Length: 54
Image: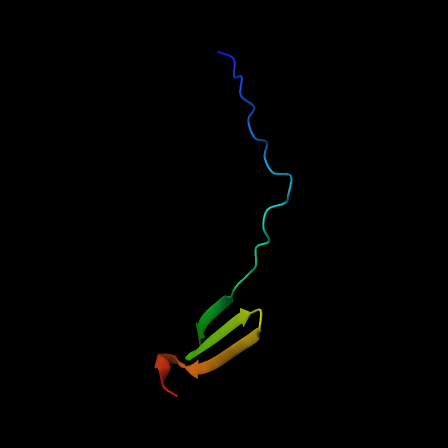
């Protein structure tokens, strides 16, 4: 059967912008834990002895 009703076309606008909220890494080497976190506000990081002792 033929379709007699018009179908809405896809919007011509681009998709919404996507932004990175945060990214981080944790590395454990040589008895130390290195943590780095980057957000739109800036970058923070820390190095602590393995096991969480400070």
